[in-house]
Amino acid sequence: MFISNTKILIKIVTGASSGIGASTALLFSKLGAGLALTGRNAANLENIGKKCQEASGIKPVLLTGDLTNDEDTKKVFQGAVDGHGGKLDILVNNAGIIALGGIQKATLEQYDRLMNTNVRSMVHMTQLAVPYLIETKGNIVNVSSINGLRAFAGVLTYSISKHAIDAFTRCVALDLADKQVRVNCVNPGVTHTELHKRAGLNEQEYEAYLKRARFTHALGRYGEPHEVADCIAFLVSDQASFITGACIPVDGGRHALCPSSLSREEGGVSAMSQSVDV
Ligand SMILES: NC(=O)c1ccc[n+]([C@@H]2O[C@H](COP(=O)([O-])OP(=O)(O)OC[C@H]3O[C@@H](n4cnc5c(N)ncnc54)[C@H](OP(=O)(O)O)[C@@H]3O)[C@@H](O)[C@H]2O)c1
Image 1 (tube, rainbow, N blue to C red):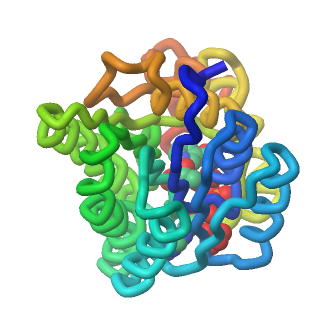
Image 2: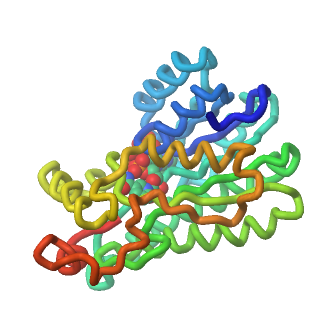
Image 3: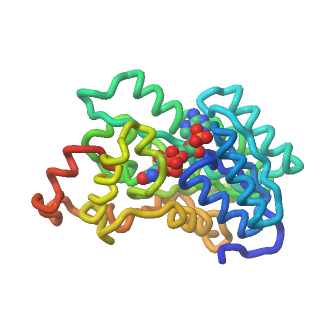
């Protein structure tokens, strides 16, 4: 699989207590990484940590903290590198939230919350990691969204935050290119996790939202977290040694669709603009 040498790489995954981050942590464990995993929910993080240890025999360093709090971020980062002898090879900036509402509904409070969680914390974590990554010629993968590549109605602040992540990825890739530190991002389509329910969708609404992936994604289905994790594992590996500044859709071809290729009757254009899309 995506491993090109026998040395153990030290990897930080933020938001590893759930969804895409948890899947990535588990895959990294299977590939033999020394892991530092972050999240806010200690019980969930402990549970993922156990699964990782079962997979690899190596106990991950588990660090709880709210990444919108600068002091927490510093503590989490320091704990991660101290737990691995001051070394870091790979940073996966995955932690994130979504909120619903277009220009008429989204509040400035929501804007600040989304930007602080999805973007500011990523900038801070990356700044802390860069000196270590230069040392190891390591690399970074940021978790963006199809919302970074395309515009959707009804998710304004989330979309702004994901467009910012794509720009951040390209800029930092150029800033660090002469140090041979690669920086990329993945842009998932709808992926089956806790993200949308946490933003307020009830079970029924979430089921309906997942069902619509049949029309909104070219492959006719939503994605699973392990499919995003596979792409992240590729990007951090030596197999991706000539890839930097890339934003890679992991979205069942959603980015390639034109609205006119979806019929209104089948939940196409109108359905896309009536409710949340990620
Ligand atoms: N699911 C999708 O359809 C989809 C599509 C495109 C992109 N994405 C992106 O994928 C990433 C992961 O989301 P997911 O779908 O896996 O959602 P998820 O299951 O809700 O997981 C989100 C993770 O982020 C962590 N997190 C959120 N806010 C945090 C904060 N302030 N401080 C520290 N950790 C925080 C959560 O920690 P706790 O649970 O411990 O609080 C959790 O581990 C996000 O960036 C999201 O935008 C998801």
